[in-house]
Image 1 (cartoon, rainbow, N blue to C red):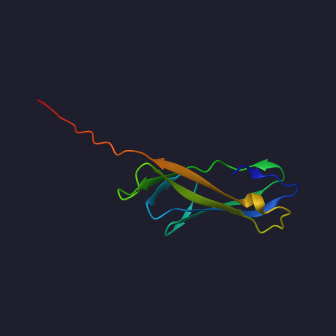
Image 2: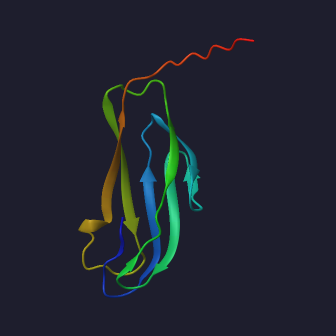
Image 3: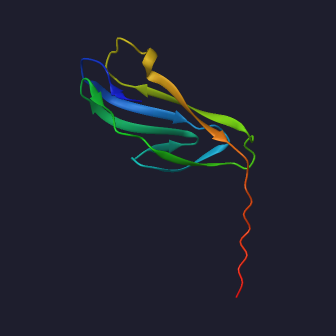
Length: 109
């Protein structure tokens, strides 16, 4: 998500991320509303041709998640303003689930 690429202000901008069942929300860099597996950021108004704030969030991955595979998080951006091009309002971010690592800790006195 890069911001408002249009020539007019975008009002009431919201970004939505839907977590797959194998992910649990932990934290976010900006205030977010969490309902089940859906995260919603209310960004307010974005002026024409402007950058949006960076949205960073942390999730935990279930031990049941498939190894050596990717999990995808669909993303959507919406506004109450009319838009000429809504095709660029969706996207996704993927994270690769690699091998699990077991690191025992041995302590000696």
